[in-house]
Image: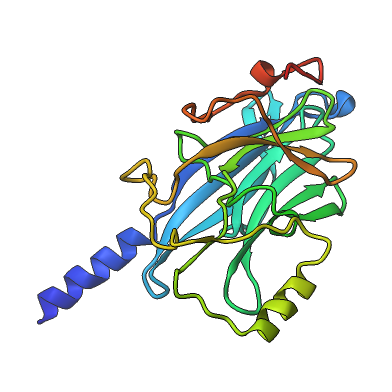
Length: 253
């Protein structure tokens, strides 16, 4: 029994060792000289919560006669709810896609714009009803890119699917009237009866739940989201780079 417990403890200790998932150098101020800032994200297994924890660290390095020295090393910050965190080309702003649960336990997504001191904007992505869930960085479709002018953010999300209902959906008229009243001001559409359980083909293993990706653009100044048109239905865009979409901050579409 002791050997089993020892093996469990060894596994527990190994699982706690964090793994580096990404790292980047931040642009230093013009007067900073040889000082550079390094941002890194790490992932770690949490066996008690049965989930993967993601945390970030920020380090300030300086090149001296003795080599690189760490001037400042921040404490780890939990960023498990962040889907993306992208610094703007100038280094003045940061865009964050965050997933949180509402009071009903449903996942909601927000896009946040930060500067060096505070959160500037918080956009409720779901409330605009322009598309489905934003794709995470899955190395196939997901991306989150700033335009050169820093006025727009480009990302990939699931295409908005039409509402469906069962043939036997017999909601009372009073309930339907209440739902219609709640949806005033939104794009109303009739649910397609009989399509509630129609199978939708997806991209398979590691891409479960991804059916039809679309390119979306957020206007940082107004908070408006638009879905790019003129992309054929049989094309699934993904991993789009800033340089391929914008020329000096102007959309090529």
